[in-house]
Length: 161
Image (cartoon, rainbow, N blue to C red; front, side, top):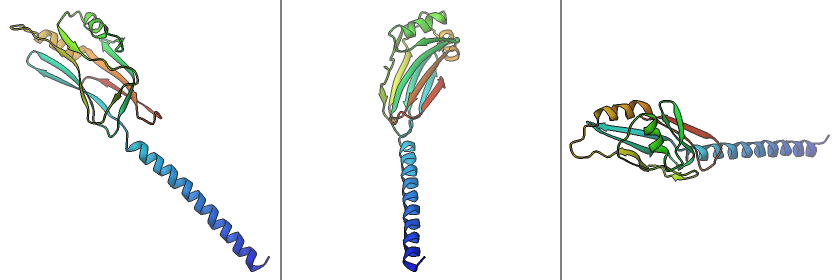
């Protein structure tokens, strides 16, 4: 084997290593891009005196795509994609109180930094709803399954912090 053949083999080896490094760098770049748009949903609970409000917030870096939204009332899961979900959840808790609500739809996008009021009690003049607020605070939870815009991994939030 002559010198030119060794040079050709060395060139081929360098080219193969460079190609492998390029593929690895592309993989790292793709993983970085996924992390740079990862969503993170959380539900904040605000209770002041006899008022109760739940706010959904995406404090992640990218939009969250809703796959599943459920209300969990004393362990009973209720699909949150239907109009009657909150009434059913409150009924399961033995409550009949005025409220306003929002239920996201399947495949809805929640932008990074966005906050949505999910639920709020409506308190009439002079009403004392401290007992109802305590029941809701302790027994109403949200189960939200969502993904990023890459749709590569499901994330789940459960609770009502």
